[in-house]
Image (cartoon, rainbow, N blue to C red):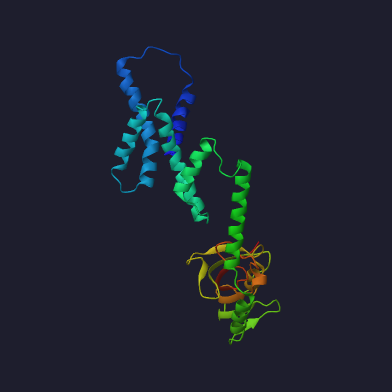
Length: 279
């Protein structure tokens, strides 16, 4: 709600900036409705898309919004703090929900009670500085715990690589990369200075897909990729389809990538090289 008001206020402010600041003048009664209609049209053009996006298929949303606007026009000075709380409450509630999704244990009733205490000058057990430091430390501990939980054992990934290395047709390169030809292509392999157009699917050892071009051609530079991916591309020919299994030390290592690739993960890619782009 706050964003809607700020957006529309900025839009209307832009009109007056463009016109300049007109000198006060007598306004004809007939102009009052016209100016009001013009302002409402501008305001409505900004509000309508926001309401449609936030409340799709809700035909009552505009009516309820107008009812809220009308009520706001009639708020007395004594009532204003309450309605300011409502306005701020939307932002606070959204922020608390985001923090809960990040792993912060938050109870709304406890938060309201503590906030009331803080606004009235009571003790909460924190100063602003110590509270900020506590939240930062808590987030760090949550991240480290999640990282540890997501990290795969080195032994499980070593077994996965050994099992695939033993399959017929799989080549193990000196670096430890596993390379398998599914369909051999034709022509020259790319060089480090080239780019390639490929489609691919990337899986973890358990078959979970973590990345997929979904059949769309993707252009990649040979340089700048994880070492195992680069090494594999340098062995491929245009028109061919290949499978490469990248050990963790040629991929994303013991840390992985947060929320996508676990630490120590071996990466299992099936790649079709469509063409080499010379540079």
